[in-house]
Image 1 (cartoon, rainbow, N blue to C red):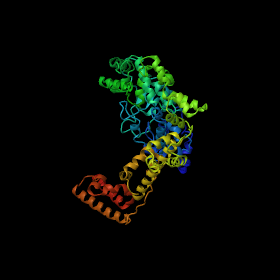
Image 2: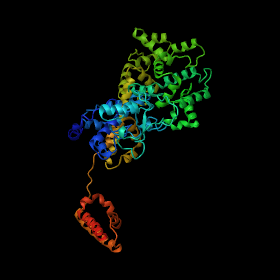
Image 3: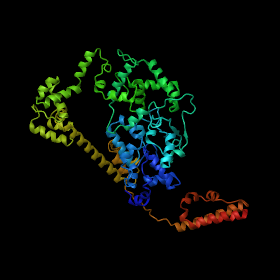
Length: 587
């Protein structure tokens, strides 16, 4: 935390640095930039985020924790800001909660230059940029009620093309796209806004994806779609809509392509994704969507727009899709999903599914039945029953053939400490498969073993990285990385927040030159050189005006020293005098 900055600069502006309804983080910082009077964007970045180039991205921010510290937490926690005032949650439902939480930590602590690639944006045709969007009706109301128009977070969500409140087509800003405006702060009234549908003859139903996109954005970070369930659900609807035959894996490509073309045309989607105007690109999109719905080997897609297209094509509304997805019977045991020959066989398969078997087994065990009897009733092996029971925290009686109680206890303690399965098996003179069975049959042992293994690998990688950084304190992070790429890769994938912190908080070694620079002697010598060069130039160019640029060209190395001209007063006076003399002679 930076108390001096927080108490001395930002607290007097706290009434202004308050969230407006549905405001984005970029919008709040843009308002601060406007009222602060800063001349260049870098000043606002340094004040709010502690770095001249950090924080100015309107879609994927960085160093948010610094902003929280410098505002004394008045804006909320970094996590709350990212989840409520940025568009990032739109992409989270298709990734694991652990991965999303890791991304939030990285964004709060520093920057994540690879985040868009990890989200799959760089490889998608929908683009990795997110143009700023604004509703003209909201701009008028905001100006009337708050004295300023600002960026609404629900307008910025990808796929939202109409205002959820006014159903008005959103205006798109060309700012923040070009390299010139990339680091700027801008509000809607300052932006270059245009209507992408202005030149279209027919009115477009541009709210095609709005409902679904906002629903994805509002899902909690703890929710993650099951891609297996989605693929089965999509294929079921694919068959129901007539895009595929139940009796074979072939799909009706022409029918599907025609429906997709109609949706693109009727909803004027080419105004938002110009590449859709190409027939080849439309065919590529059609092939990609059909591969996601393949009955046996569906393509994994984590890009939300791919799923929004399928939801629009296959379901009447988001509510219908959401209800169907959460209907366990529709998602797990639907007859069309599994391509069953008749309803009877499908019901039998559903009853024998592992999920239902596990539920029935646990119920039998909790009712007091033995593990062998419960396994017999469920129709599974005793080994499988022991494993399933252990996953629910239910211990099973042991009938050791090889592992006596003492050996079993010893092996359990070793595994709890994260010992390698092969070394444990070698020490006990048993097979690795026996160790694996022990891991899965002892309640909680597998999770303890995984946690211990992770902790060991984490500590080992951290220690190695510390030894590298301490041995070469003046080296760059890239040079450290080359010394042990495997350790860097492990930390980058599994402990990135600590890795970034170790790089950012590296000790700043004070390297003093063996001989202190004598600025006074350097200034005297350089001033004499400037005077001589100026005199020679005046003699060879009578009647012409001498400029600083000419002097820098005549005196070798002077241009590089101009950045330190404050330490060279005699040189500065010599330059000013030479230029002034030639000006008077010319006049």
